[in-house]
Structures are given as C-alpha cells and as structure tokens.
Amino acid sequence: MQGRSYSSMLQELSHRYYQHQMTFQDYRSQRREILNSIDSHYNRIDVQQKINESANISSAQDSEHEGAINLGEAVTIPTGGSFPK
Picture 1 (tube, rainbow, N blue to C red):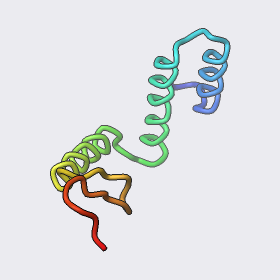
Picture 2: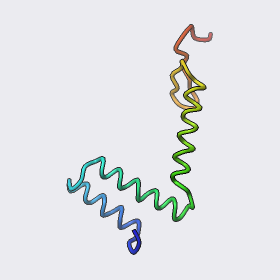
Picture 3: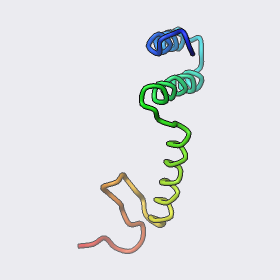
C-alpha cells in the first residue's frame, strides 16, 4: 500500500465496485483492509487487538443477558415472566 494515498486507494476501490468489477463481499473486505491500515497508520490503533477486545466484550454481554433480547445499550426486554409495572 505504499506509494499511493489512502484516498486514491478508496476512490479506485469504489470505482471498481460501481463499475461491477468486483463483488460486494470483495469490496467490503478490501475497504476494511484500507480502513484498518488508516487506523493503524494515523491513529496508532492495533486493529487485531480491537477485534479481540470487541469479541471478549460481546461474549461477556451474551452470558450476562442470557434469556433476554438486547436492543442496544439502553433497552433490554425480558423474555420470560411479566413486564414490570
């Protein structure tokens, strides 16, 4: 990825996708790689570490709210029993 700006890489990728030269899955995969490179280069973010942390948080939340449907951080709907009055 050296020698080309991230902006030009994203523009070229978008152009190739909109010209139907690649599948949506390939487009998203390549876009993710470019965006991860931007995070790593400019923000000094270790993308793999963030993915692992996110997976750990998700699994902890899953076990914490077993038997409930979570609609986001603000709302949790109980799946059994009655609703509070």
